[in-house]
Amino acid sequence: MTLLSVRGVTKRFGGLTAVNDVSFDVAAGELVGLIGPNGSGKTTLLNILSGLADPDSGEILLDNVPCQGLTPERLAHRGVMRMFQLTRVFRRMNVIDNLLVAGRALGLGADEALTRANALISELRLDVIRHLDAGQLSGGQMKLLEFGVCFMVPPRIALLDEPFAAVHPTMKEIMGDFIRSRHEKGQTFILVSHDMPVVVELCPRAVCMNAGAVVIDATTREVLNDPRVIEAYLGGQAA
Amino acid sequence: MAPSSATSPAGNRSGAQLSNTKTTVEFRAALVAMAIVALIPLGVSNPYWLGVLIVSMYFAILAGAWNLLAGYTGQFSLAPATFAMIGAYTTGLLNHYFGVPPLLGIVAAVVVSGLVGLLLGRAVLRLVGPYLALTTLSFAEIMRLVASNSIDITRGDLGLGVAGLLDSRVGWYYLFLGALVALLVLFYMLLRSKAGLFLQAIRDDEVAARRAGVNVVFWKTAAFAISAAASGFAGALYAHFAELVTPELGLIGQTGLIVSMTVIGGMGTLAGPLVAAFLVYVLSEWLRDVGGYQLVVFAALVVIFARFFREGLWGLARAAVQRWGRA
Image (cartoon, rainbow over all chains, first blue to last red; front, top):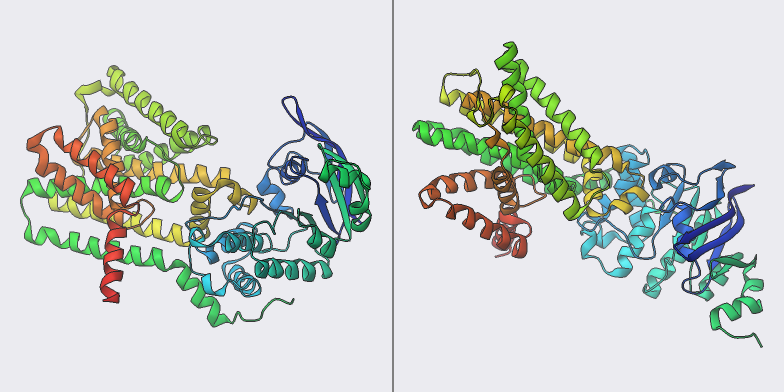
């Protein structure tokens, strides 16, 4: 069953077409890797999917209901949760409160939100820093915290933009395990990453973008062996 | 990996307590400070100094209200004194022209200033930083000039005579103190609720707050409205205390004092601005003989605290206690 449908989405910034007639579907429970070289339009597409930018044309359906133009908060309430490439946490609030914000805003009661926050803190191994302000955390810990925020209330679809970038291998493993276990339970993901071994390991399917357009949408192995993808990344012809 | 089961009910309670500890400690410290203030009339009967302390409490309410908006929500409005003026004129005009009793006028002042705050909050919703500050400053000046130039209605700079409420200065002292403590409790309850979480989230990162599902439009507007209503309440009380309302209540210098008190006390702390309101206003009275230089002193203090001591006097006091505890 299709959960998210992206149909002919285009976004221009002046003379630059950042996203050019992009279409693909994501089924419920799928874990789709979204790859492509820098500047290929991945983050702009996630901005559109998470309500931070409006498309110039095209349509986005969530559960077959159009959702383009909705604000990020309304999309969050409809189950679209996004992790940013440049970490966004509440720096003057502690780790628990960072998690509680999402829990309370998405409708959990105080006790239930706290129970979930504690469970996430434990699962993401943030126990030692639970009462530190987010601004005092390392870059990797902040990433892990923001990752946790996305799962305070299990989303319909999690849009993860470069969760593994500049993160210690241990934390990468924690996030990888988390994604794997949630995927096994039916959680839907779009995962943007330049870390190809992780994409290969986690994502059965990948969509590759270049210059704003979808180059190929296939199994991850097929995508990574496609000459157009190799050319897009390396700027030359495949052997 | 299955979710951990390491979250016992006891663990939850502990987490909740620790999560709100900072606010609770600040609230208790503020209550202790207010208890000390409550004892002052037992030793000070000089009407002049009681008057100074009453005006200090007026400013403490304004500083607390502005702190909710600027310190906790990150909305650097430069119109707190304007809402006090709006509250004062609301009850003043109702009393002067229609004979509305002061208590009813004060309620009307809270409603009117809250509504104006709500409208201003909606109007400046998308503005941040200097743009927000300059727009609210323009609003403040426009409102003051309207009050000053509507001579047929407000008597302009001559001021509008308003009925008093109490005869005793000590009575006024405890009325202002009661109002201050009531607002302190209200703000404390607000900050401990999910509203407090949302306001602080908006302050730290509006985009992240929206991503987390926080209705930023609603909560920013609510912060403006609550802060304005509290300021209007203070202004209305002051109007009946002074028995006179003038446009001077909305002068930018008044806003400067409120900002000084909040920054010196500690923006985003519950106790700091309230305590600093007393220190700054009493100091300004002591420095009255040196004329305009008192403003230079406060401006310098604001720069020093904003640059070197972001958490103000409250932060310094907390650090001192922590050092003392470790020693």
